[in-house]
Length: 125
Image (tube, rainbow, N blue to C red; front, side, top):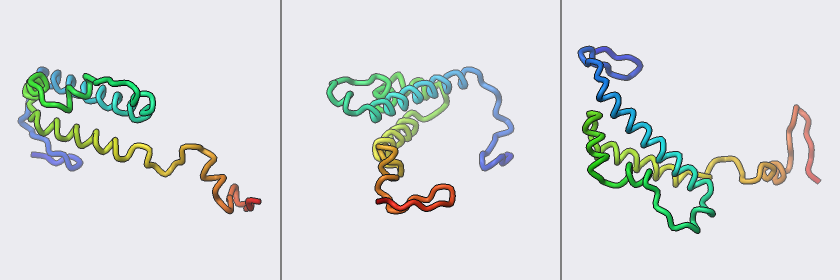
């Protein structure tokens, strides 16, 4: 067992192309779900009017036999993978739009009393 950058590598683990194929299938499914979640959060006013179910989100977040079979073929536990995905999607909902940047780019600049730009001070009138 060698430790490479805090990741344990099993020296006797052989290359398994079938396992890697199914892991790539999971990666694509998770990427699709994250893209859909980002899109629905970004344009929530548009998607709130629609009563639509996203199959990409349902596939990775709700229990189903197909997802569990893919996880089994990828040599992963489907329940743990689903739990991690759901945690990530919930974290995206909580933190989306809560960054330090305002909605309008000039809002922070407009609301400040003193603006420092290139070592010069400009006072708001």
